[in-house]
Each structure stands twice: as C-alpha cells, then as structure tokens.
Length: 196
Image 1: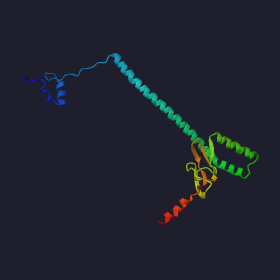
Image 2: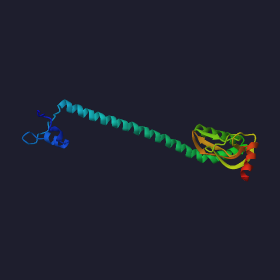
Image 3: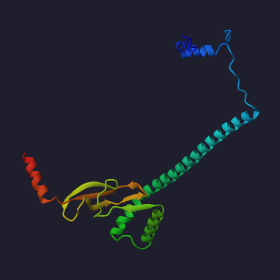
C-alpha cells in the first residue's frame, strides 16, 4: 500500500494548527502580514467615520428639537389649564346667577365676554341631564333608582357642570345617575336565586 500525505493531518487540533501556522519551518515565529492602507483608503475611512458621526448628531439634534417642541406645547397647555381651573368657580357662580335670572345688563355682558374668552382657549362644558353616564367624564354622587325612560345608566340631574380642554378633563361633572328599569324576568329570577 502507498502512503498518503494526508494520513497525519487528522490528529492536529485547531489550536495546534494555528500554532504551526504562526511558526516557520525552522520554528521561528512568523510575522503577521501587514496590510498597509494607502493614503486614499485612510481618507475614505476617515470620511466614512465622520459622516457616520455627523448623521448620528443630526438625528440627536432632530430628536432634541422634537422633545423641546413637545415640552413647550405641554407647558402652554398646563399653564392654560391652571388659569382656567382657577376661573371655574367664577363660571359656576355666573351659571347659577343666570339660572336664577339675576344676570342682567352689564353683568350679563361681562359674563358672556368671559365665557367667550375661555371658550376661545378651548374650554368646553359638558354634562347635561339625559346623557349616558361615562365615569371618565362624570362623577356620580347619588343614585336616583331606575327609570323606564332610559336604556343605559344616564344622568338624572347635573349638580355641577364638567369642563374639559380638548381631550383633557379639567373637572368632571358631578351628577346623580338613574339606571334603566330591570325587566320582569330578571326581577323574578333574582328572588329565586336569593332563596337557594
């Protein structure tokens, strides 16, 4: 049989192969080949690195501007809400005076002017008798029982009007709620379940 030059190759581990490759046949270490970059390649690498840095800084600056603008809008909205919130008791008093017919003449003109100004800043009133009850906008303080006139839990009476600016509720409406009348089969089923 002839000897194959590949018979010995299967016994070396990867570490031994790497060690053998790093030494010359005389056993002296071989220097790694040095890849020298040309001046043009160095400049291209520098330009690529600087371009990457510039793009990152531009993205950071755009995000910074967006955050500053969002914060500015939020601070303005919070400032408006604070000022308008302090005027809610005045608006409540004007509403009660108007209900009792005491708001006449010059006082009515001032009240209308104030309502126009706060409406111009986005203030909206909500909460009228008959509306469906929504716990996000209404604060129920009492329950008036059941009524056949409603199909869902509704506002029976509004004790204090609610206000919002856009989607933000400044003050929920304080209300008394009424539930829809329960049907006869449900009413008959309830006592039967209590006796079990």
